[in-house]
Image (cartoon, rainbow, N blue to C red):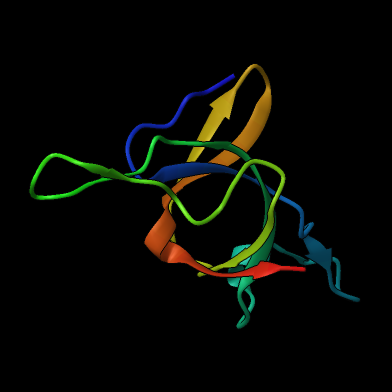
Length: 94
């Protein structure tokens, strides 16, 4: 599995693409709403100015809501993920 560094997390996007009546496929990032996903890996945390590490707020298994244009798409072993900074996560879905 991927191991993110620092304040980054790896997200498995759970919101699937949607097809319109005309057959045009709209990816989840083309919609005007935030996207949801599941955290599958998390980094060690933020490195503060004094060198201390502050743990991340999110943890593996959390379902999160994040900005639709956030992060970078990555592929690993045939699976697509999104790598993003924790600051791009809007909320944890409970």
